[in-house]
Length: 332
Image (cartoon, rainbow, N blue to C red; front, side, top):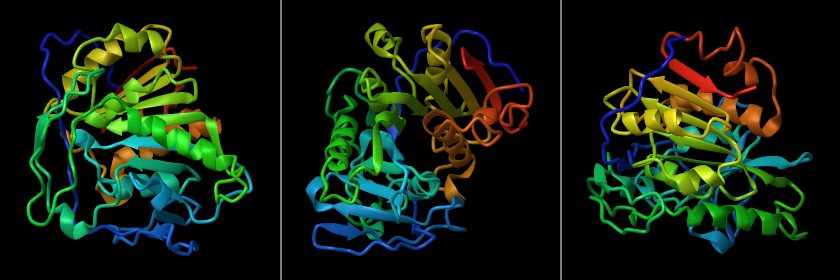
């Protein structure tokens, strides 16, 4: 393991981008039936089906049409842990990273991503770089270039995290409704709030919610240390970036160095990639593997080598992986 030390001396303005894949496929099939209210989203995913034990389904619930749901096709009998996800550039497209989010869902998680599912033909090859992200607590709107060809998903650069709170609220209400497929099937008392780039700022901005049990900052970081956010943090944090070519590298590094000492934090750098990470690789690539292990530990209390052991201990799986640089603090 290479230890990451030193204080970042250059402050950069984090650009939040949405990298939009070509055709993708949801592997593993689905037992869910489409209805007028709940529409199954059919997409074509790269490579192998998700690797987890649960076949998954991607849904667009018309009662919560602002979001996209990734979940095990068959829910229960035990309650499923919940992940709420903010997209790069805070773009409103729940199909931005389907390989990555499908992989997470295949391990028993219910994932609610910000944005409706934008059809592949409208996503284009790549959305390109967006305008500057809003300050962490601000709601500074901004426009971003759309993808090449077809209509682009709507973009409103607002990192206040409201869509992530709405996702938790929606599932909390559904879990108490006997008519819902989520009735007594999801645990909204301990939720993961995560996001990529601008979506990572969204996750920070909901981190004070008592229902949030862990925060995932992926290719992201605060524009500057934020004492209000630091004061509200009460859970573990994972910070993952690409190498120095990642525009969020310095921000993520500084966050690790300046987060309060009491906050358990894992910091991983995958030097072979830049800001786009590995989300659109087969099953989310290396970032998908790390996300599943972290969530299994933090939300499912998996203390084996496939959960806690991936990040902690003398034989820490990721620490021993030469493709990663890693550091941590206060993790037990």
